[in-house]
Length: 272
Image (cartoon, rainbow, N blue to C red; front, side, top):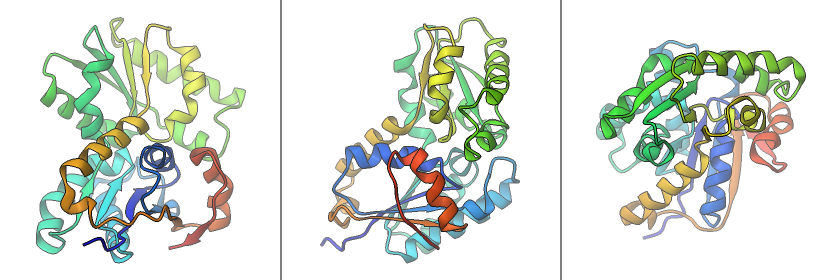
């Protein structure tokens, strides 16, 4: 029986809104609750145990709001917390709930975007150091070689709305050059942070035109559509009134000022 459960979407801050936008475009009729843990972001440089603790707290908060399905729209949380939550916390305490991430859906289809079988991954230090993309991609496609590049300055630039200014160009060019210096054969670059799509226009001018620069939003959204088709026991419990609610652990006024840049439209948030 349908119980009007919303789909929870979690991110350490604003970046998950780029994934939420794609999900809402493909599944517009469902109810959603978005939670940004802005008070404790960015997650990228935190230790594994800290990221797991923060992520679990936010997932449990979304469960308490009625969510039966939560999407970790955050690469760092997906890399450092998802597996433990899925394997330890859900079976023990929440057997009827599900938590999904953004890494596996992307890894499953990455072969469609490369002909040279050489893929670059750009992400936070936490995501890169976890080796999650390397492991997941090689699990599905052992013949694909993965080159990784951490970009620690990109999230602060984006969250301070400085990413389109000329002062950001040095850091954009620097990290791209460092990635390409690892191999001349890279023909696909995955933006393994949900903030990075806001740099897409600049990145396409930096990378040679033959390189596919790949954002995750539409891929994750398509994967969720498929997941709900394969799991009617989850899908039938989801509400379909088209309701969207936004929460932040930080200042709602500050969140609202920045969030529209990521979500593509104005929104109104509440304190969690």
